Each structure stands twice: as C-alpha cells, then as structure tokens.
Image 1 (cartoon, one colour):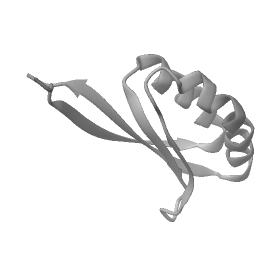
Image 2: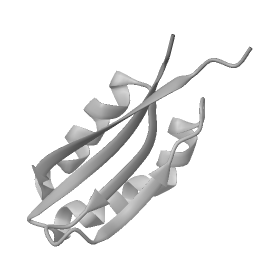
Image 3: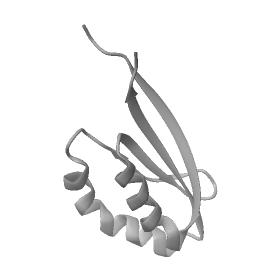
Length: 87
C-alpha cells in the first residue's frame, strides 16, 4: 500500500543579505523537496531539487552560487516545496 504525500509550497521574501540565513533555517526544518530562488521580477535565478538524504551533498557545490546571488540581488523570493505524509 502506497502512502499519499501532501505537497505544500511556501514563499519567503528576503533581502539579499538574509538569503543564506533563511535557507539554512528552511533546511533545518526538514521535509524540503525543492527550492527555487527568484529575483524581484519573478525570474528564476537558481532551482535546486532535493532528494531524501542528499540535501547536504547537493547543496555543498551550490552554496557558492547562492552566495553570489545574495551579493547581487537587493530582494528575492525563496519558493520552498515540502512533503508530508498523508493519511
């Protein structure tokens, strides 16, 4: 029997210098399946799909790119998709 999963999407609006701290906070909460960072115009700057157990491995090479984005944008939106077990 396959369990149903519920997907939730949340958006966080942050200024560039808060980007890294907010991402760390989001990842610490767990259940993250997908992260997308967009500029003020809604253009996707970076999109990172997460796989179970591979969050740290995937993000290590991406942190430098995220740091560069944080330095270049004044404001951005973080879109986070999470999954929870359904009943």
